[in-house]
Image 1 (cartoon, one colour):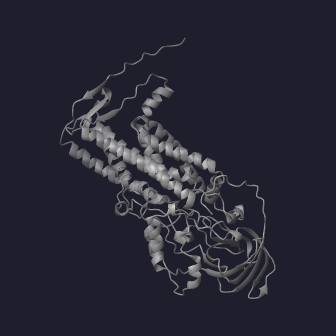
Image 2: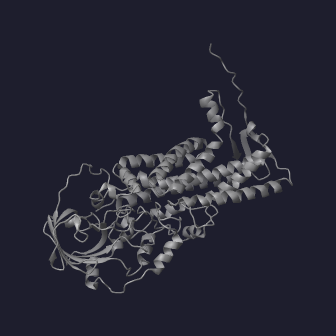
Image 3: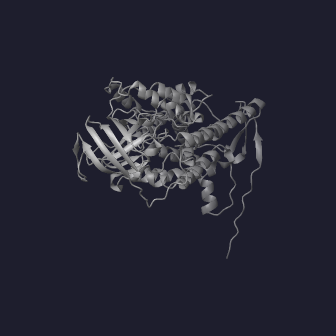
Length: 552
């Protein structure tokens, strides 16, 4: 026999008198029930812990905001505002990167929060607070957490919504054996080959962030955020994806926002009982309070949903942050077989075991030459992230790739048909983002260590590119669409280190239509080389991307 449960009465919404802080409260009265001693202690610890994790506490972040050129922004300027490391750090760790000891930041912050909570409890015992004070503090803590989570995940999501975070494989990556990729690289490429799925992931993340900006949709946003980022946490542990701690961070924030709603969700979905949401909202009684609230909310939404989207769109169209932005020599683009290879006038016949002879040469759409040799090379685990403006520092092509594939950035003197090449792998590369505490997708040392390595790097002073050639090459910074120009980009090019000690080659190229290319000159070991390349019109089983970033 079916049963009918008694429907509990709905409490009337009522306005409570002013609490003495200039802000009244509106709520369903049951939320103003007495807090137990245990609930108060837990809340005090949670308040300190989540405030520490949600508010930037690094000087670099505030310097970054103060020094922004708001009239000439780059997408990364706003992205760095949204992506910052917080918490109490004693060990040089951050919220970001693949190192699991980044979680130490949370542990230290929690221990400090426990001590702070106990001190708060002792102070509170000296006075008689009303329950309403805790409800008000809890409300504002949830505001801080949901805006922190919303802004952060929107910045994260736009790099997928406009797919640049996981690029489609370059020619060189397509020519790399599967066994020469790290697990992390395989995962990132598996998303990169299906850009529309990457866009779907971006829609989910941006939607979750947007829902968190509004009180009535916070629960939906937190559920979406918890599910989406929970999957990313698992992926990072399964594939060693590089952002273990940062993805876990959003899961933690989402879990906190859901704690308030779990009893209601359980009652509604599991017990199948009539459920009335009961929430505490401050009533902004005075006019200036109402307009301040509306103004701040509008500014956040316009800045991180409007302006950031536009800047990210410009980045996608003209300057995708993991791919080099400068177009390469069009005649050279493609994949080539090495049909003849001479070194110091000595012919080296083809052998897959040769550690000197080039194999599988590619010229990318941008300014990159790659080739394979049968000797081990250092492995870059950075995943090519971060915020480098210069093409030579955009290293997604080499990160997570073994098997002896060399990747060189070139500057082309198309008048004299000469390529000036530098190895993109650079031991002292200082690519990390100092503002956010990370260079992108994990796998590198922290910013201070990288800077020390960079300062210790030996340099050349050999003016290896003639002035005439430099005049023909032009300024790399001005070679992209003017709409992608920014003060940030100008600053990095102006401050670029001179004469870094990289492996270098100077090669003259000769071709008519690109079907055959002859390279002559000196390689990175100062040997004289003569290389004949014949284009290989390969047909890959992998279909071409239907959504490509950049203009080449």
